[in-house]
Figure 1 (cartoon, rainbow, N blue to C red):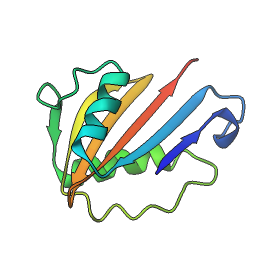
Figure 2: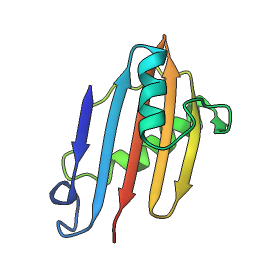
Figure 3: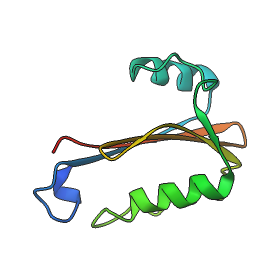
Length: 108
């Protein structure tokens, strides 16, 4: 799964927000994505998150969409926060040998 949302998907429509979601079923695919995004390819430097903290943060990002996707995230067991600034958030959730990467950013 690879989903991307751009300014027209947010309120107000002219806001410069972007949301990207990726789901990986192999650790090597997650590692390749991390490296392509400028991370070192491992989550050792990321801040661990509890399942609840990850789900709450992910929900805040998804609710900002006009028509948020219906995602069942009950499989998430834990997560990591790679970045959580006012203009750039990157989270990775893991469970059942599957990973979900969420990247929200604004260019405003």
